[in-house]
Length: 238
Image (tube, rainbow, N blue to C red; front, side, top):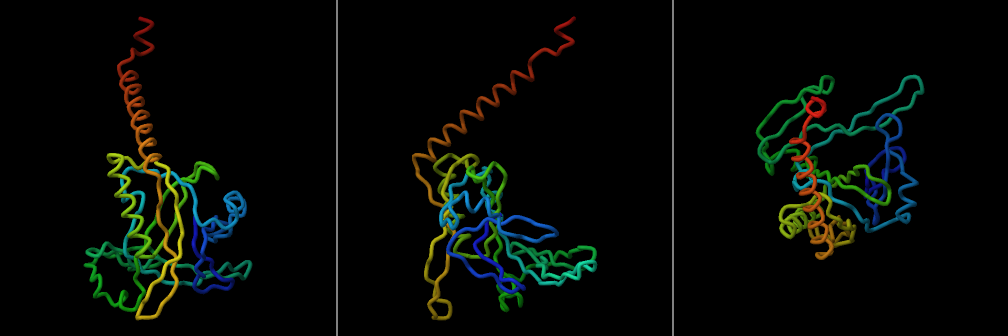
């Protein structure tokens, strides 16, 4: 997973970073720094070369409204305890699925009040988006970045739409650069520094990759048709 925040020891809200940070699972839902991946990418990268993995924009960036609740879990043999975030409610602004029972995981479907929801008014319901991609420099596995920033979500959605328009709908296999840049916001009149995740791309590189992907898909389809029409072993030996 790619992170843009760091949780303090002992719990609490994560500190925003000015660079990307790779983390990995260690033990039961615990995340630790992926030292090897971070060193490969230069320690504290503010930009990373990635490959998009799906033609459908909503599967590249899956966004929704979400509300989390913090619960305490413990391991009796060791006596250790930790905080874990549980997805309490999520939806698309029209329909929401709210946790009815934490023990069973059962959810009830409700009408999402969206802006009129008390959770949003209390800033306990925010956008949540999962961006999926591959990082060639650290291997071919899928990497996920989670953001709750309206600015980041909007910027990424716009770029995916641009790229899809350039390539005629192809996103899978397209190389882009994921960036993290400082910006200024003025919530309630106070100036604060925020960090926005965005996508940058070279139009010539994107067009060349799209042509290559079209050729590969055409070749694959041709081989598939030939394989379907090829005689079976029994037909060869009759």
